[in-house]
Image (cartoon, rainbow over all chains, first blue to last red; front, side, top):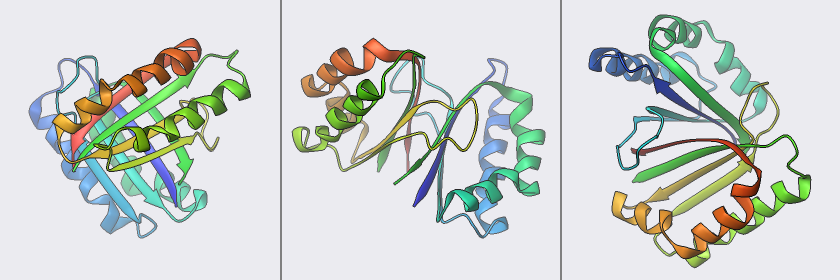
Length: 97
Length: 97
């Protein structure tokens, strides 16, 4: 299994509606991109200060399948339309499980 | 399930030995901390530029169990002895699965 992890930090003026829309749109990607084997997203629970805002943990059979997801038009549309407008910071790692 | 995700960026002068020691020491934490339900760590695979260096994805039954891990002496020892000396940046999210 090849895992993609990305943590996103929203801008301070990101609205609840904008944050929810990111989750809603991302939730549709596994149906649109068959290479996605698992997909678990969520808003930070607020246990710790200084956390990022949102997490995506996705599983793939191979690095090549992850790249299909990364570059898929449905994914890029969510990034452009929903994520980029409220993105303050981003951290990502892909690793072999 | 309550998931803890942390991404770590190492300093440029972090040695391979230091990076490997972080993974080795963290790998012992599930045996030392019974609240840990799942624990999957790994070095970034190098598919993308500008990634962070290392990922930890850990599962717990509850936020309270995550806090036991967060504050456990065995965990704090790894942070102090292995992670802090080579840490350039850190991003974390905890979320409900």
